[in-house]
Image (cartoon, rainbow, N blue to C red; front, side):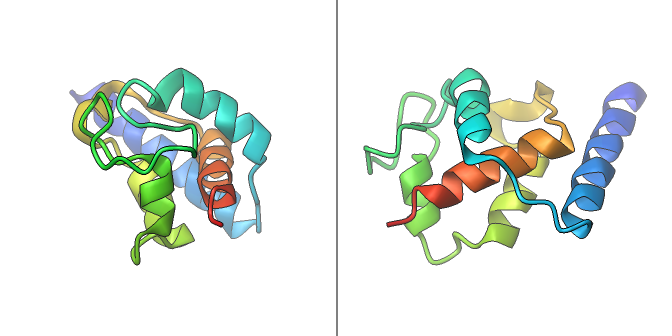
Length: 107
């Protein structure tokens, strides 16, 4: 448990440091990460607006089109394990890439 907490803290600090440096992610790289990691629960295609894909999690397009779909809110959600994501820890770069991909879905 202590290892998980320390890994989570390191991931959060890494993502925060990256964002503080003005980092912006690579949407194409974020799409690949999303397809590998997030698609188990979320519809990451950007084509669907269903609220409850296979993992009962919101589709990425629904996330970005919601009133709370701000960059900051999406970053904080992706950084912290949520739902069944409790064993997935993304690097700071991966967080920025996935968030850039999600934001690229905004029409």
